[in-house]
Length: 308
Image (cartoon, rainbow, N blue to C red; front, side, top):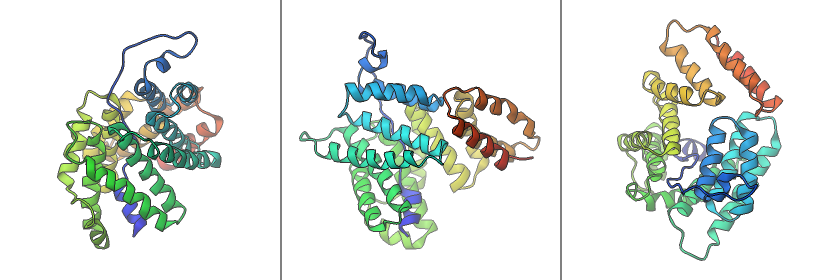
């Protein structure tokens, strides 16, 4: 039951909503002198565009300048997750991912000052990631504790989306997933009675609001989850396709987004031709930011799963 619950309730990824004015500082990358928020945004954009080497370099600078900031921890965890899903054979990524999550949770929890919205947002995401690891390891008692810590923080943030726009993502995912999961799996209904009631329609509305946001990261994350929900949860490919098309257009180097786009294109376009994949395969080969293992993984992913 916990494995099913984690599938529908755990929110993923993270966003921030503030930017700071530019500054300069010798040879250190310019992004690093702005603020933890700006640093996080730059790293995130490199990830979206599959510039993993640049993201790694800038994360190193961020860890020197903002070693104990919640957003630095989130940037590192997020980068590691993308390395895991783009190079699944490298087990070191998973080990580093788990260790970084545990360390980050411990450091943020130990802060003497009352946590602000960003700290709370970081913790709810980190506990969600921790839950996923616990479930994957078959440690279900730990998973329950981690999930409870995650949902407990989401509960406090519900209704505060106007104060902190990033909560549109976590609140939206929680409301949708709790309602959907309890309806699809009756056994989950008993568990979800312990937490705020879900609402699929309201959850989707909040995610749609996130997609309309001027915040670039919130927009991307909302588009991704709306695509995944419509494509793989409610099985509405025509509703999912506009979000997949938007992600594909804005991040042509991102092979995760491209894969979902072509997966849906096969369904919505009766004239789909596998030859249309060739420019994407070429991008994989030309991207010097990808390791040989990553290139091999994506070429195999496309060739095995996408066929006429």
